[in-house]
Image 1 (cartoon, rainbow, N blue to C red):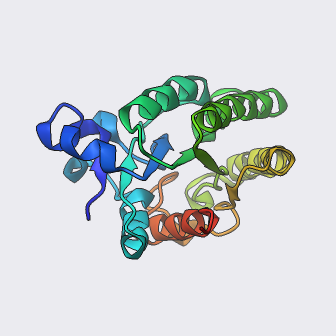
Image 2: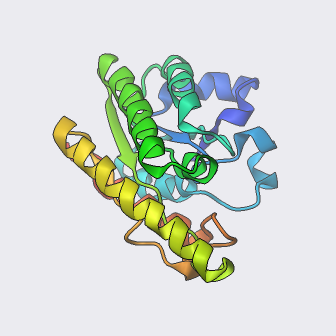
Length: 212
């Protein structure tokens, strides 16, 4: 069973397979690079590949809808699109916020903005009778940044992720804490996980799937 990629949405094979998707992964480049072309051209493998491997014994099919460079403001439209594209999917895994935190300097304002957008996405999923699952913003490969910048970036995550956890606890939304699991050696560049890192994210997401 292979991952279904949104970049292939104009093909006949995609059209035939999309109604069989059970888990939709939405987000930025931590999820996928569908705006870069076919998956063989992507810089790194992403966690939905490894999530699919974990889901084979359960008979679940995964779709990868990640868009490189995406910010959370665009997330509701992305999720709305995927709700229509994958009408029988039961779970929507959403991870956004990395690009927001790197774009706007006011961390408190940006965190509220991310969480507000994620809340809208989660509600859209629930309104269709489906289950949202979120994951938080991982640290970067701090060894590739000057110490001052690394501390600043680390601090943004240390502020935002507890806010997101509180929101998810309040609203009963499963949250995969990938930030606490990833270290510098799990990255292929400054921001993007290598295979080891992508496997770790997949395992955390898999553990967050509701057990039926």
